[in-house]
Structures are given as C-alpha cells and as structure tokens.
Length: 405
Ligand SMILES: Cc1cc2nc3c(=O)[nH]c(=O)nc-3n(C[C@H](O)[C@H](O)[C@H](O)COP(=O)(O)OP(=O)(O)OC[C@H]3O[C@@H](n4cnc5c(N)ncnc54)[C@H](O)[C@@H]3O)c2cc1C
Image (cartoon, rainbow, N blue to C red):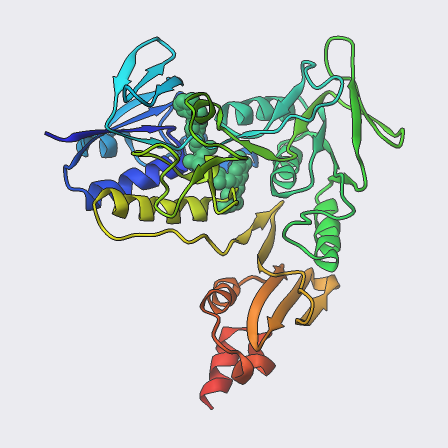
C-alpha cells in the first residue's frame, strides 16, 4: 500500500515537489495537497504581469486539473490546515476534518508584512501576495484611485508599475536612500529610479511611514518627517514573513522560518519544510529558484536516494516596472574585490562586474541583460576569469571568441 504523504500549501514549491516526486517515487506515496487559496497552484511570480494587464489571471496556472488527476494526487484547495498533531501523525483542516499522514511537508510560503503603524487596519489598506489581492488592486486602478505603495523593493516596484499601468495615480515611498538596496548598488538604483519615474510613478526615498490617516477609510499617509500624501488606498509591499504558526504550535523548531537540515527535514522526524516558509542554514529565501532546488532535493530524499541541499546562490533576473534588472552574488563588492563598470545613463544601461581572487563574484545589470545567465554561471562555477577579463564586460560572444583566439 502507498504511504500517505501530505503537503500543506498549494503554491509554487508544492507544485514543483509533486512534479519531481511523481517522476522519482513511482507510486510509493499516496500524495495529498491541501491549500488555503481557492484555486489550483499558479505562478505567483506572474501576478505582477496580471496586475499590469499583460497576462490573464487564468493563464498563470502551473498545471491543469487533469495533470493532478492523472497522477493520482488528491487536491483539497480552499482548505486551511489549522493544526498538526506530530505524535498522532494527523492534521486538522478548517472544517474540523482530520487527515492522517505518514510523511508531512510544510510548503506554506510567506505572508505580506503589514507595518505596525496607526491606521494600518483602516479600510483601503491592502497587500500584494495572491490573486485575491490582485483583483482588489485592479478594481482600485480601474476607479483611477490615488494609491501609495509602501516599499521600494521588487514587490513594491511591481505593484506600483502594475497599478500605474492600470490607471491609478501612484506614489511609492521607500524607507531607504535607494530602491532595491538588497539587489542594487547606488548608481544602478539611481538609474532604475529615473527609468521608473518616466512611467509616471512618483518616488519618495528616505520616506518612513508614521501613520495612515482617515475616519473610516484611508484618506492620507503621513511620513515621519511630516510630509503628507493624499491617498484613497495604501499597499504594503515592505517585506514578507514566513508562515510558521502551524509548525510553531506543533512544537516544531522555528526561528524566522521553519528550521530544516540538508534534506529539508524539520526538528520532527518525517516532517519536512521547503520554499519560503523554510529556514536553511539561517537563511529564508524569498525567491522561487531556491524553492525549486529544495523541491528537487526533497523529492530525491523521499525516493530514498542520496541528496543534500547546500543552499542557493541567489540571483534576481527580472523586469522591474518594465525595466530589465539582474543582480547576483556580491554585487556591492566586498573589501579586496575590484569592479568593472560600464554606465550609459542616456541609453538606460548600467553594468557592473565584481571580481575577487581572479573570479567573478557578483554582477549588476540594468537595461541590457542578455548575458545575465552566463554571468550567473561564471559566479556559480567559480572558474578563473583572467583570460576573458578584458572582454567579459562586452558579453559572452566576444569574451569566448577572444578566449579561443
Ligand atoms: C507579486 C509577486 C512577484 C514575485 N516575483 C518574483 C520574481 O520575479 N522572482 C522570484 O524568484 N520570486 C518572485 N516572487 C516570490 C515567489 O512567488 C515565491 O518565492 C514563491 O511563490 C514561493 O513559493 P512557496 O510555495 O514557498 O510559497 P507560495 O507560493 O506563497 O505558496 C504557499 C501556499 O501555502 C498556502 N498556505 C499557507 N498556510 C496554509 C495553511 N495553514 N493551510 C493550507 N495552505 C496554506 C498559501 O495560501 C499559499 O497558497 C514574487 C512574489 C510575489 C507575491
């Protein structure tokens, strides 16, 4: 008889894990996936495109219903898991139904952070995490509302761009002195700011939110320095928090995320965690690629094969507010490293390569990102770059031709 394996969460990590599991475990498990969102797993990364009107909400499903059915996966969506009983190998869902498991995987993702400021619970304050949020934001934009987006990271910029494109008047406020400070150095962030402003988005830096004002709904937002911005809605896009409550209440070890070892096992035997809810070697990743790498490792482990997850070199390679942006590795350049920089502000292009000990260790690209994956590969493989150093800045084709000559 197949062993019951239950996955909590029907997001991107869960979908990839099932995909890998059905290939490698060949009927060993009876897989059930229980997800809170009332629809099939979808590509969350594409929510920005849905908001910007570039993709339809139903075109982002990761797999059709038939895919899950044909592989014998039991899907329960629109159901929240409320409790795990580790000792009895049983979990409870909202309806009070109990489900038994032999192995359990937590893939509960993260929630958007709501700033702890007065007025944060007023009507008109929203987040940007799932399709329900996107539907709400699209309604605001269609009504040409004035929206303040709090947060100048990837999510905030995506929200601002989508809302502006859909018709809202958008101001983005960011606590730091530059946008995307976790991915970009100052010149790159400065260039990105000017490119985003060209799309009609007003950007305020060094802008710390003090409170949100309004009688029963949002009317304005006040910054710590006293500036006030009139608004009909506020979108918090200032970070995420791993969903760890279930694990915590079950007595499973939790720091910021659910703590896992190199086979993604939690402190409880036979209970695993992956994706944004997991913390591996002190790191909670907020990107999809590490979740996919973890999915591959966990599937191998569950199939009884040798496997270990040793962490991911994270890279950001995407369109932010319609501008191509890539960042990987030590993009700031640690002490003792050197940087090669090419900046063409007028053309909207910036390129920085960081070299340490004769190897490429970091890169930032704005505008022109054709060679991004090649740079990422060079960073990951740690190959010496002395022979291509002179031409590397001008792209793969030129550098490899020069190397071969
Ligand atoms: C707008 C947006 C744009 C993004 N863009 C990028 C990008 O460009 N590149 C990139 O790498 N990453 C991006 N990300 C991040 C990426 O989407 C996540 O890293 C990825 O979705 C993580 O997968 P996950 O399965 O861990 O979490 P999720 O995809 O969030 O899935 C978790 C699921 O678990 C469910 N759940 C939680 N608790 C329970 C419970 N108790 N019971 C049942 N179900 C539960 C949740 O409802 C959710 O459906 C973006 C995210 C957003 C929101």
